[in-house]
Image (cartoon, rainbow, N blue to C red):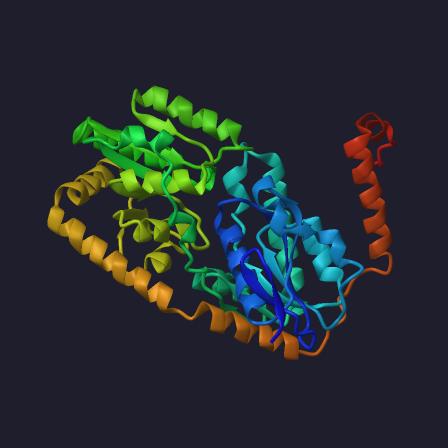
Length: 414
């Protein structure tokens, strides 16, 4: 089959297959959804489908692999298939809903909005609206899949008639890089390094991680550190609360590193002695299996999808008592036989994950979508007029902010 090479991937020029594009609100560098989206595109292109990634926003480091979601509007027919990654309500989501293409929805879970009360009012609204908006897709999709059984069950509870599981892409190429030790290299010594990787947001419960570390350091090992890797952008108030907690506890050796490159991330896993997770809401939690891959023993709170992700490996705990978790951490770190058994179990769980034929499963779902009958989306007659109007307002707000502020405000109804 003739084709062309693009970014190292042979892309088929087979025009008999309909395009299968992906659409999502935002494409970020180094996060789990971004890795999955790029992995899906690779499978589709290698299988002969034309496939692009359409986004509302993209970080500069991945902008080159994406296109503006508005490009879909004039180039989308009822024979196209859209793989719509739903993680929060967005304009891109609503446009995808209104287009005539057949839709395969991939649900990455939405954090319950109550976690952001008093911390991020806008995100409270977005998560609430996103969860409410999700139910509208129940009759729009050929199939809705979660990237974990936990997410699939949530789709089923909402009312989606056809659900399945498309597991997270078991691709760790982002960790198969030369470590950049500029930051992590200073911690490669005889001290004990406790690691957590994830965004600094309230649902991840970094406050609990800090309390557990404080108890461990105080009761068992003063020569220990806590390394927290993840962005706190947009959550500056929660970050400040964590700093206040550290001061109140008088706990030294807690380090925040923000968002790091793949080269820096692999270096942090290399120096870690234990991965500690206290998160209360996860749709999958990719850093857990990254720790498996880097052979770091995992201790995690048994909430949401975490037990299923660990798949019988790692150590789960159900208490939030710092003294009890500190004792558990000390046992794992001191008992060499236990550590080896943990690592062996994690190796086995990772092997089970990697043996799943992700490509075959994805292509089976895509073929179902291709074979399905087109269904006209239910939108108001003036949807596209409203969309064009909002686009004009967005341009004014961005390029002429003073003029935007001068526009008359709509009166609120009683």
